[in-house]
Amino acid sequence: MAVLLSGPVVPKVVPVSQFESAIIANHATVAGRQDWRFPRQSRLLKTDEYSSVFNFRCGHSGRFVRVYAKPNQLMYARLGIVVGKKELRTAVARNLAKRTVREAFRTNQHNIQSLDIIVRIMKPFDKTNVLQVREELLRLLHKSKRCLGS
Image (cartoon, rainbow, N blue to C red; front, top):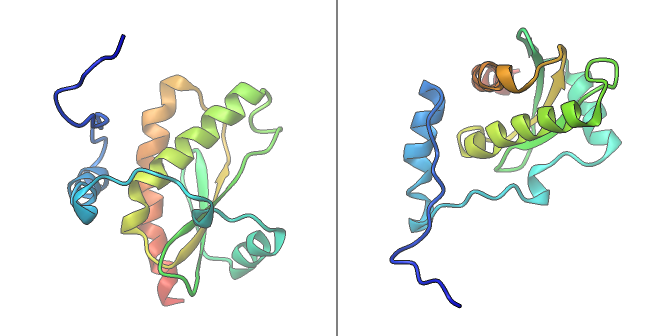
């Protein structure tokens, strides 16, 4: 049995912060459609890429996460995530942390140009703190634009 839909299916997105609400408004008009993907080109994959960002030494800390940033020669931002087993002992907790970081970056990546970013989880959090972590991460991503001038 086929189900017919009356219009395009659009994912519901509830703005969490002032930064994210502006991004959602801008993002809805990209090429007349929404592009919510997180492609391979938007990720830091190699050890050398991680090392160069850490060695650049431009970082900002929050209560739960630390964000390192380095300008790149590309026209888009790339993300790397570091989650240690000492901070989050279970795989479930580590995966929640990575999903939270990826989602915040994915919905905000069009606002961050030409930066390689590494997010390091510094303090454990769970489902009850996800919104606080997301808000903090968006604030730190916004601050990391200062690394472009270095």
